Image (cartoon, rainbow over all chains, first blue to last red; front, side, top):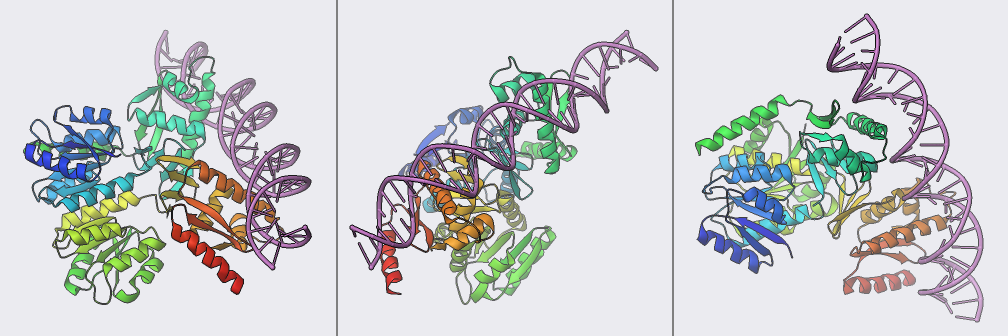
Length: 241
Length: 241
DNA sequence: AATAACACTTACAGTCGTTGTAAGGATTTG
DNA sequence: CAAATCCTTACAACGACTGTAAGTGTTATT
């Protein structure tokens, strides 16, 4: 049965949501520790997270952002206000659906089943900057095409994506490739890195692999100045609420 | 630039939509022949179709259904009424998003960009009964896992899916595999069919490949007594001809 | 500027999965 | 029962991917 996590502070609304979802045939789990909601959700790994925007100690936006940066759990955002601003912001932060809180039972269930169906079978898709990667088959979706990466290149890209923008050590990459760091010529890793680089550039992907001398490698966005700027403005908006 | 097709009868609303979308950076094309809207949309093959529900000669529901059964073009449904009924029906018919018509500019654009982003790079995903197939890489998504089909099995499955529930001739299958029906041992086709069957059953897919004696093959849903009934009638039909 | 350490490139042969062929067995049709 | 058709299995050829090896390019430090 599909597991849905509900993050909502108002008791009445929360009970109502749980009731509707339970009757709809879902297993419902609630999160009330809003401060650590993102971490808890990551551990729960539900099939869907329903987030309220107005929470006491934190904002649903923050939770959404953190959740989306570290997983591909579908997120449905609730808000009691009918403001387009919230919706816009939620979408920018990676929310997958949006719903105004005074909402009929049928509409909620429709949205939920829609979102679940949409993510069905794609639980192993990792989101990169401008591309998707299937961590099982290493099928890569970029620029309206799809390519199957050779296994080693796929493993490397998964390992690099797991590190986000941070560096990944050569040991980690070796273990990702062969399960062990022993008895392996380090040149083999370099060759595989080179091959991945070549396919990435040939696909015109917006990310590059950069060597960190003596330590490892990391992914780097091609045009990374705008991204940080947007991030900052989004933060200031949150403060005003 | 992304192309959006707008199907809306009220002139004022249509102009407003076009204006907003144009300013949003999209190429907009309108459809006013509502009776043949589905066919026209299939030929246009836009990146997104925006459908009104209340149309003079037909219903947006019908268009949506026909469109979704023959393509994977994203559909955004508009309605002027705030009835959950419409939304439910639209979702059931495969609509990907839903929006009430008195709607702010920002919300429309947010929804549009969201839906486009969602379908980005997945334009070559074919929907089967309970599974998805990438027609480029032949990556198959079933039961929360993904598998890469060998090229020949992928080609066969694509060809069979193109036929829907109808039969596909052996010639068509041969051309799908080798581009020509000449000089090919028909046994080779059978071997490949057998292999595809084996992988389909091993993946517990809800569809089966059924041979149509002397003519070709077709896909059949597993749990549908109607299908077997059709099978029998189909056979008798063949004999009587 | 020279050297050492590190990163990159290229070519080649071994390995593994996929494919077509062939032969024989199973099923359906009349 | 016989003929046609479909199915199964095994096997060798082919191609893609991989690790090895050797050599070239780059960076940092003295």
